[in-house]
Image 1: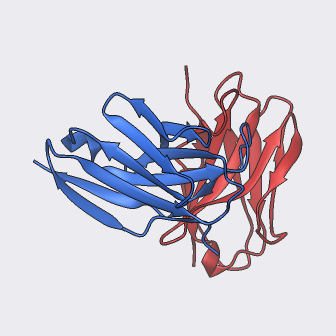
Image 2 (image 1 turned 45 degrees about the horizontal axis):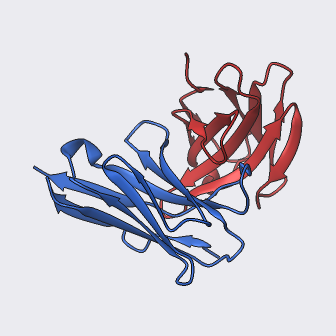
Image 3 (image 1 turned 60 degrees about the horizontal axis):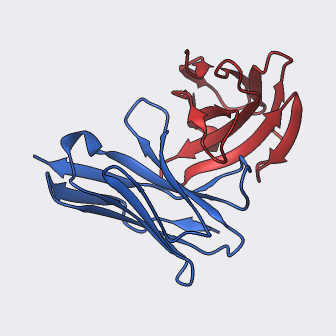
Length: 112
Length: 113
């Protein structure tokens, strides 16, 4: 069974640009969550989607947005990039069991 | 405001000995707790969890203890093995089935052969 797949794995952008990250969950998983990992901050919850609906949202500015498609694949977008957006963005999916999220390897974003 | 705190950024333990990783939380609404392990260049993987109705959960070499009155939980690994070297994250949620997890900042565990 394929795991959670995130693309791209690495990317470099400049301030002011926007970026779109993609996540394909494990087959059969309908919930997709996004987390940001930065040094010293741990993993911070961005948002969670289930059946194309955002069910939960973390404390991030409106520049961070996401969506989920009918096949459960998800994308997140960050507009007007800032240096502080440099981070590892992790996607996770699950279908059962509280908190037993299955994470992808992440997309490492560097903003110059 | 860090609601889940892992105050030890790093820990080194001899192979075969016990590793104890600690985690404190401030939000009394948390009622489900998890530990994740993360290797470099990989996503975190689920290790073990505990509900607030329990004070201990065991899975092989891994045991998690919860002290609700102290708002403290710990992960014990016995015996420690070189493959246990990784970053360990403590996480919490406010209810069973809630995918919004609040993570600590992680503890890097190094097992010395």
